[in-house]
Image (tube, rainbow, N blue to C red; front, side):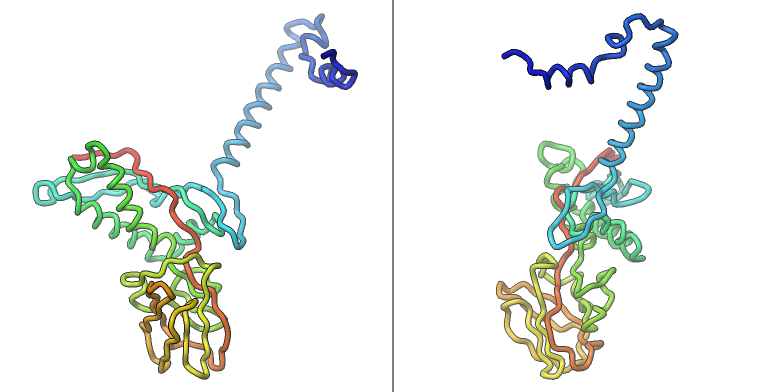
Length: 266
């Protein structure tokens, strides 16, 4: 098909400098090439920066995936089962993740317990493996899967209400996770998909379509269940008098894939 007038105009707009000014000398064309090359490097740098930096969006739908490095120094060291725990495994743990707010993992770093809990959980997982199990065949996939299971509740713990850190009390209701939630709680639903129905005057609470649970008001570790039997532990000691309503509850993201890089065994 013959080119249209619009096609010809578009082609003319994208002619190379040599075609536009074929009589230009090398000295005249040189600066143009240098500037163009510098502009290309700047543009490439901007694109890479946008790819590397997670978009800071919040909302009611999960965003991502994005990448999170678990430790600022990059590495973790733990002792596997071999030779009575006298050997070690070292690697750089990271993960890809989805979250309502892609800056959430960086917010978690402000929790003074975050790094310690992560190290303890990962080192405990390492201690259940032998080096050959991790290095051979599909062993690394199994290893990464168990590390993910240990790390996800710490990176994405359950929140009650509009809180920054998970054990902050909800500013509306005064509720917060109970003392046993991080160790024994099995409820792991997404935050915007689940609610607690609370009646402070009647002293009752319900998780989604689970059973109505009465309380006295002095419970630091009140167990409530959803309709599927998953358990959430609540601290009701700071419940706002007269509060009657719904409070969102759940995790604010999930790990998509746990990544083990630079694995060294000694």
